[in-house]
View 1 (cartoon, rainbow, N blue to C red):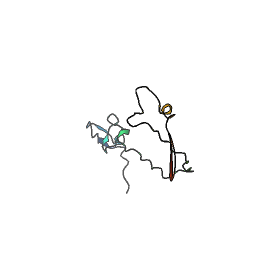
View 2: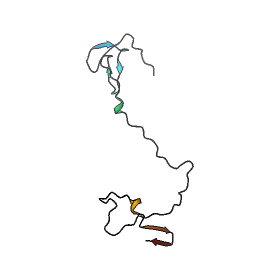
View 3: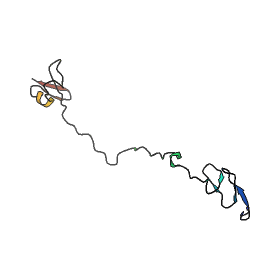
View 4: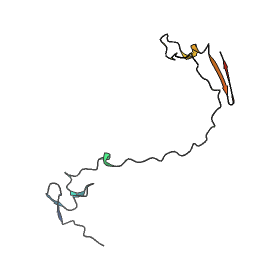
Length: 108
């Protein structure tokens, strides 16, 4: 369907109600025909966020390393964070445990 160009037509601004040439009026983001003084672009905060796809798999995965299991042992009632400020590595001199699948060896 063909429309007229509107070069001799006038229109009213939907915000202020003043008369303007039809081709000067702009359609804002809410759908109103407004004059250049009342035109406001859409705020970027009103646009929805672009969702990113969740990653599915790694490109070149590496298998887990099999490291020996280490267990920190202390006497019953002792705390790792004791008042004397000893670190677990300093206290572990007296206690140690080495383990494996199927058997456990405890050395005191």
